[in-house]
Image (cartoon, rainbow, N blue to C red; front, side, top):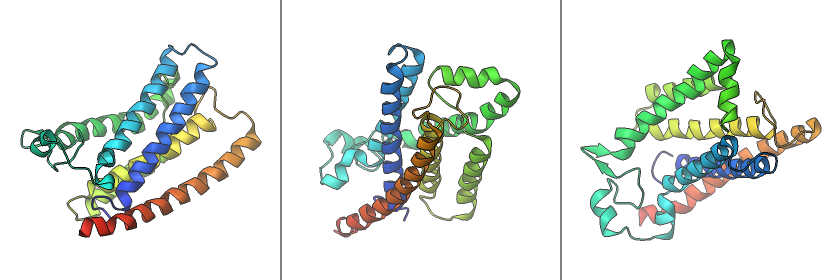
Length: 230
């Protein structure tokens, strides 16, 4: 389950892809009401692009799926000899382990714990975060996510157990991005759907989509088993 091209990795890719598409739609819709060059629109669009790049990096830009050979540069400088940036060699480790994981830890704690706690007594923090196109996830949901990540690191003995924490993060952000931007849960800026009845229907559709993502991840993982064995 934790190996390359298995369920956990495909879950991350699909979650990141859906997040990127959602944020892209929100950015386009928001640009119809405010300046396309406003910090709010640029922030949402930039986040959409960043998450989309993360999705492609997660599966090495479809390299393994398509059976494409890595160039000489990546064979020599990538820890897994794959066509991606996050596994580029950096000292005795990789860019992912040396830099990116530390940035994810700091950013994740700030976004899910520090800022939501501060915003409870200082509402201006939440207003500023939302004014630049971002959002703050609900604190109870963030705590559940952080506890799951901690438990996965403490209880699971596997060299790739970090992948499980990354999957929890992908699912967490898919759910909270949908909740904030689409139906306005804990979010004070305009949401995509104003009608409460539409929001209720959309929540049901989202639940179906989540089940479909899990099923599709399982299918994709099963489909890559013969390639891995070969």
